[in-house]
Every structure is written in structure tokens, then in C-alpha cells.
Image (cartoon, rainbow, N blue to C red):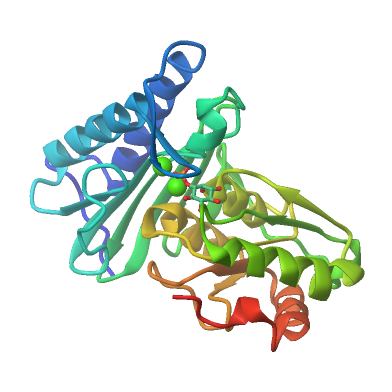
Length: 273
Ligand code: IPD
Ligand code: CA
Ligand code: CA
């Protein structure tokens, strides 16, 4: 699968990296000040910074790849991300954290061809952490190769997860965690940024990450990071994750099997739409 080169000769990875860093730095600059917060729905907030950051990223990509599709949470959420070359952007992932001054959020920029993710970048401006991957070339954090956890059993593990906003799925997730997984695991962390949560699993900082109901921009970088870090990322039923999977599990293959076995027959595995 060929990874395209931009008008000025920059690679897609260079463009994604530059765009994520510029937008992430804007978010960090505005972190302490007035952010212009409003609620999209109960529990789901957006700030003026989200919208500005997305416009900035789109501008940079458009200059280099004028014919590619742009998909973004704030201004192009209804555009298909799995047809042709599509850039998929989450200007701030973890806006709920960001809006109240919790410094756990990031900027996601990815490129897919017909739904197959080719390039994925996730930039955390607070820690200056740059997670990036190009299909076939490994996954990196700040230039150092990363790998998923090697732990074989959940008993020793840190499980990362997040909850969907204003959705009955959140209850299913918590029930499943408490009843099926809790007695068999180490401990848990709710992160508040699914993009960072998946990236942490790719880097083996946590051992497994799951969440029900995510969008292409939450997952685009994470799908590639986990696969390039030697892990597997699937939907709730164990099928390889796509940009439209209704929930994901990311880990190494042994933990994955155990997690799927423990949660089999549980409500979290049933579609809730
Ligand atoms: C959200 C975050 C959160 C997850 C939500 C997402 P946003 O993205 O990733 O951790 O639980 O499902 O929508 O709205 O902050 O970009
Ligand atoms: Ca998001
Ligand atoms: Ca967002």
C-alpha cells in the first residue's frame, strides 16, 4: 500500500506529526485561560480551542494533499473515513479533562486508505510525548521503538479503560468490569482520553485497554500503534478492529484471549444500538 507524498515533498508522516504538534501546542497555550466551553450533549463538552485546532490541522493537510478527504470530530464528523485516502483528526482527545484543567489530553492525526490506517500520530503536548507509526515500520514514542506488554495473565495487569458519554453502554462496561474482570485482574485506570489510553497500551505502560463506542478519530492512531507495536486490537467480539468498530480491546494476544473468555456472554459483548 503506497503512502503518499505531499505537494512540497513532505511524507504523510511528517505532515501528520507537524499538524499534531502545532495543534497540540495551541491547546497547551490555551490550557490556563478562557477556552469557550459548551456542551454538545450532557457529559460531552467542546471548547473553542477544539474547533480552532481542527481548522489549523485541516489547513496544513489541505496544502499538502489537496485531493484527500478530511474527516474531523468538530467540522467533518459525518464524512466517511474508509473511502479512498482520508485524513482523520481529533483536535483534542480528552476534552472533558482539558475543559476542567486536567492535563491529560492529546491531538490525533491519521491517514487511512480505504479504511486501512497507514499513518497515525498522537501528540500529548503536556508531556511532549509523540506517539507515531507508519504501516510496516514499527511504532515509536519520542523516537524510541515501543512494544505492547509481554505479561501473560490479567492477574498482574493494569487495565486502562474509558466510558462512553451519556450512554447506557457505560453501565454495561462497568458491570462487565466489576463482575467478569475485577476478580481476575491487577488494577484499573480510567484515563479520560481514549487516544492516550490506546497509545499507553501500545507502549506497554498499561497491559490492556478497552472501551465501548468510539469514533474513527479516537482510534485511528491507536489501531496502527498497537498493531505496529506487536499487539492486537479487536472489536468487542474479537474481530480485527476497523475505524468503525463499536468498541475496542487492545493488548497482547494472551491477555486478549483471557479478556474475551472472561467477558463472553456478558452484556458488554451485545450490540447496544
Ligand atoms: C472522548 C475521550 C474519552 C472517551 C470518549 C471520547 P473527546 O473523546 O476519548 O476518553 O471516553 O468516548 O468521545 O470527546 O474528548 O474527543
Ligand atoms: Ca476523542
Ligand atoms: Ca475531540
